[in-house]
Length: 285
View 1 (cartoon, rainbow, N blue to C red):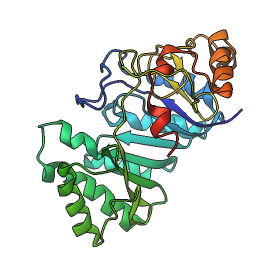
View 2 (tube, rainbow, N blue to C red):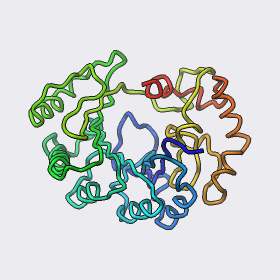
View 3 (tube, one colour):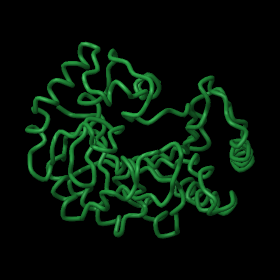
């Protein structure tokens, strides 16, 4: 079976403390290069695309180039998600010249969650990345993400500065009712509603529903634990360790089988799944 996407967390360290990402950071630390190669060997050819993210910002990982090169050796097409705070010239060049990076996601929402930089200081390296991408006619995609809209798909006032900046620099008028706006060739602004991360502490609970876990996605935390989806940042649904078992062994554990059978029947068997709102927003979009 080939998955649409496998999330591989190189690190759970991001250097920020965003309210929309409540999980505690810096608990597991960085996956070593040796451990990553072990994981890559087990997951090669198992997914269409691999992303260096569950928690953490991959641009903070020391020697990120080595991880990207290993992924290339295993023919792993990559998607990288970053807050945009660590886009120095060296990292910009790495992102734009690594041929196995298919997509770069920049979470612009992260800007509103900090007091480190003013808007111009934050957006300047991002704009340079975009302009270099355009000049070089890069084939990978860049998505600028603003996932902070309300349930009616209305933008908060704080987004206005970003909208005006993009309209001015790309000489266009944004359609704020559209989920995706094309800014330039292979560069998009992606708008979406804010959602609650899966947590056992969430008040809402439901036993009926389904999920892309096991059919379209899997996740591997930086300590090697296999989880069924990108929402399980605390390994509460851990199926075991890929450092100790093969992927097939973990996917055939009783816990995995019960979850998969439940999803097929529209039943959420795990408590974390019953508390998750993700399937009601992103999965349907």
